[in-house]
Each structure stands twice: as structure tokens, then as C-alpha cells.
Image (tube, rainbow, N blue to C red):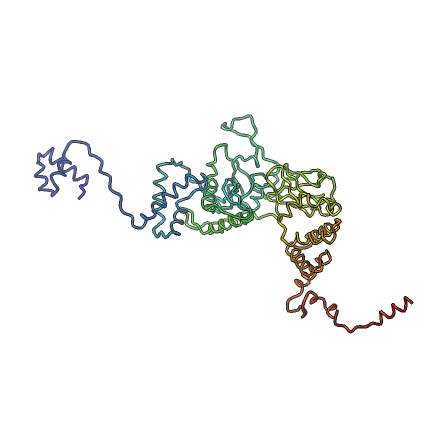
Length: 518
């Protein structure tokens, strides 16, 4: 039985001041003489021996797994590691039935041995008044290639509702487009947005030290025009004072650890952003610590205070004027994008958006390509060069745009080309095949492929044969199944041709020809 401090004091007074012996005190109190002897001894109390750890029948079998994941964190990207909650979800999938607080306790003890934690001032915001914005980085596997993606994060300060979007770059057109999609996600525009001193929005004018009392800033003209369109004000934190926008600083890490772990594997940025948006919507069900309602409920309260969206979106792109090269290409950011060869060597306008490039002649759209963020690359649309190649069929095997395209052709295309070359070996066969390829300008690739396969099956090895089957497909798509005429073969959709081959034979026409020849 543990002896309280009050009883310790009485025992010491009885022994030292009243002269009672240890044996007498043991008889009066019922404590052992050894225990009383240690209390009345005039020496400092020794620390209690460490207790042996208690058994953990529920968590014990999973402790090694938790330590394994925490060790794995040391090999993962610094900002994309397992959290206590993520570890808890992993253990649940493996059969763990204990509580999440036990996981947090173990992870907290692990981290306290290795980290020092900062202290922050709690803040409170009014609905619809403030949001915070920042960039982060994460790792994703896109089209089989592991790469670092730039993560745009904006967070409403009152409801804590986040918006997250991945980009290939942090360039200004990506930065502004992230705002546009965030405002759509929030259903309005906050009155003020806080940033750090990112170069896509502001330039710090040299002349005063960053740590001095004042720092002069100059916003970029495009960002000012963007703010004017959506009517919000900007607030830039002092240099090296990112804690002034601590919500989004935390939000970048939270979204990376919870939305991007495990590392997502997708086919494109579009699929990645659809996945991340789903995670943002799912986060509406979460209740922030020490809040009385979920994020979604708080956002419903905040939404009426947001500024309404304007009637049309801001065009988030970089504009420049370039001259078309002799190879019918427009150069932007060292990369060359193809144009129809009819354009010639003239000046055109290039609009560089976050994910695509538009090339225009005044207001007429000439071409649209996926944007390339590499350097010194050629981005071709083979259809742009078909008219020129029809004039020069001898260059077909070596034309760079078509060598890349041929790698993706279905098996029926080389078969059609070989049959045409055999029928017209003097170059007309290649020209006919080029005319067939030009059908991609007016028909979906799947329909053209099916028409080529049908033409090969029926022996119609020419453009007219492929066109016939394309028209037959179009008629089948436009006519409901129940309204299609009965019949067999490809003439079922052409009633006026149904009697061919079954009408009675009339030889009088031949007799008239014979009389005329006499």
C-alpha cells in the first residue's frame, strides 16, 4: 500500500521529535519496519524503479507493423509520409480492432524523441472574409512515369474547406487557373486571400533588407487584372513569416499526407485532379479538432458571405505573337507546335494555358495541342501535314510526324497501305492512303478504323469503299434499331438498291445499241 506524503510527515515527526522507535511506529500504523525505516532515514528519496511495460493484447500484435511504417517514413518524401490516422486506417485493413488514440500515443512518443514542436498563436476568422493560398509538391505516377507534381492549395479560413489541384508547373497561368477552379469549388470568392511572396504574383523591390521594417512590393500586371476581375484583395506575408498563413501551410501537408498517400497512379493530370477533387469533397465530412461542426456544415454557413462569381471566367493564359517556321510550326518556350500547312509563314498568336496551347490567326483557332513542359520538343498533329504529303508521296516513309503516328496505328492500316501500294505501285497508292487518313478530320478514329476493316473484308481497297462504309455507319447511328429496314448485308439501309440483281432481264437496250452501230 502506498504511503501518502501527509502520513510520511507524521511518521518522521513521531520518530525525530517525539522519540518513538521504528518498532513502535510499525505496531501503531501497521506498516513494515523496512518501509518506516526508509521514510525516517535522513537521505534523499531514490527514484522509483521503472515499471515493466504492461501487456497489450489488442495493440501488441500490430506494434511491429507501426514501427515498420514509421521507419518507412524516413525513406518517403519529407512532406508525404504516414500520419497517425493513415497508420490507423492501414492497421484497420489488416484486422486491428483497437482505438485510434493508442496509435496516436505510440506515434507521439516516437516523434517526441526526434522532433521539436513549434508553438503558434490561435486565430479566429469571420465567414467569407479570408482564405489562404500556397504551393506544395508531391510525388505521383502519371502514365507509368514517377514524377514530382506541383500542388496548388487554397483554404477558406472560417470553414477550413480546402481545394487542391495538381499542375506540372508553378507558372502564372497554372497559379491563376488554380484560383478559378477553387472559386468554383467554394461557390464564391473570399474578400481577402493571403500569400507568401511568390514571384507569379508579386515582386519585392530591392533597396531595403527583407528583415527591415518595411518591404516594398509590386504586383504583376496579370495578377492585378485577375484580382480586378474577381474583386478580392491580396495580403502578402512578410518574408520568412509563413506562419501568418498557418492554415494553408498545414493544409498543404495535410492534403499531401492524406490525399496522396499511397502514391497515386493515374493516366493523366485530368485523372489525378479528379481523384484529388473527390478527396476534397470527402473531407467535408471531417470535423476539425475543437470545432462543433463538420467542414461541410461550416462551409454551408460561410457560402452566403462569399462574393458571387463573375458572369464569365478569366482567361488564364500567357499570350505571345510568333512567326510560323518553314516547317509549319509555332515556337513557344523552346517547343515547336504544328499548324496546318495552308497557314504559311505568317504571324500567329499563341495562348499558353496550364494544360494546352491554342494557336490563333486573329480570332480563328488554327490548332490546339497538349502543352509540353519539356524543352526543344516537337509536338505534331499529323493531319496538319496531309495536304503537303499528298503532293509529295515519296516522303511518306520519312515524314517525322507520321513516323510517330504509325507506331499507334491498328493492324488494318498497314494492311490497307500495302494493298494500295500493290494496286498502284507508282505512288498513287500512297496518295490514296493519304486521302483515307484525311477522313480522321471528319470522323472519329474508331469509325475510320472500322470502315477500313470492312473495306478490306469486302475487297473495296480504295477511298470510295471506305467512305461507303463510313456513310453506312452514320446511317445506322442516325436510324433507330427498330426503324431500320429488314435485309441482309450492306444494302439494308438503301431501299432503292434492294431490287438490284432480282429484276427481270430486258435485252432490248442491247438491240438498240446494235442497230445504232449499223
